[in-house]
Length: 267
Image 1 (cartoon, helix red, strand yellow):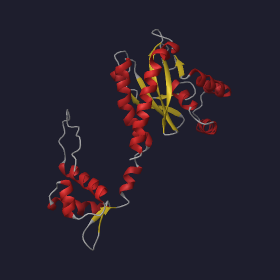
Image 2 (cartoon, rainbow, N blue to C red):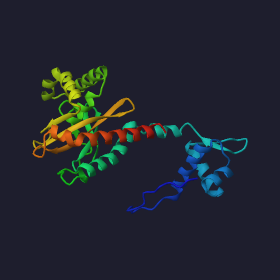
Image 3 (cartoon, helix red, strand yellow):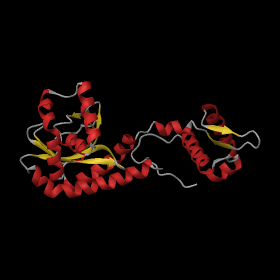
Image 4 (cartoon, one colour):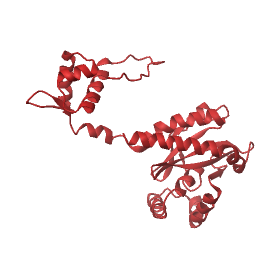
């Protein structure tokens, strides 16, 4: 059985071998199907005595079942509940965290990945702490208005007409449409059409007067799940100038991230 990469470098904590072996056993059961202790011992390299104890514990927890006829064990359906707890957005956040760091190292400007949560764009991953020109460090969890931010407009622009209508209706119902948003709503479809023709969303001076941003949507397969921006100083360049130099790397970053997300969610 192949060894797994570890993240011990720089960690003050020691590996808990019993936990590692328990996961090795579960992975082996997933690979082998019904398997006897001897087969599991050969596959994992774990001695039989330890395997018997692990099997007993995992059987008590409901993750393994033992066949009475020959003592072979297999995974139970309960193991699927662990996977159900991992939403596609969680996978996207993990992938985008790495992707944004690489993008910032390439362009210098910081980026954020946000998803729609309760009528607001919530930043799930950010590379501000890796940017030498960012004055922000803790943006994860911060919100941006859907109808006025580059992140929100990029996301809305990726929705079908029906999904857009339902999303806006939900926002109205839960009270996340502000007074400023009410002025935008009648013309939102025209603004999104202009965005499509331009090729990107942008905002100027939304959160801070001296900051602008451009953004593109992120999809998992065909399903829109969020958006990624690049933030920059208004004094450094206009949104059009930012697009001329940053849009291509941003789009390439998203394409790679989308492929990685799709591969992980199809495992």
